[in-house]
Length: 198
Image (cartoon, rainbow, N blue to C red):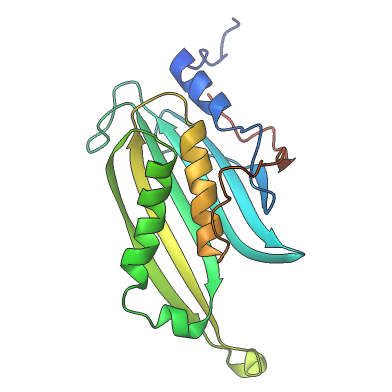
């Protein structure tokens, strides 16, 4: 190692980051490596995803893995996953007062369905309405659901957590879970060499 070189990343982080690159994903999902935030933890990695039906993008999201060998307050361990999902919704759906609890259950039920161990889950569900004014006065009113969540995985293998996040995105996009006997496909992925850092 030469002067100025960063020390190698801890093996636990390297293994966890590698497990975020699934070999199979749902056919509606396109994954990409994205830059990870630099200041939230000593080590981080991130992936982004879009959900498509035909050529229509129905939902977008990102999943960030944070790693601190010393842990952080509220983490219950060395790892923390931070998820974001945004999906277009019909106005009548966003008016349902149960949308928040239902959207949150999409996350917890997806995590449980993939049999992953986690702790300290928390988050928010936001319903947003966008109206155009001025030269955008003729634009249609749009409504969106945004879910922000974080939880602490209790294992280094994050593949089940990634799969649960992908299921969450599809549910937000109005696409039901795949039946158990239907295979996923190799991921369509756009590579970003800067997405994983040490």
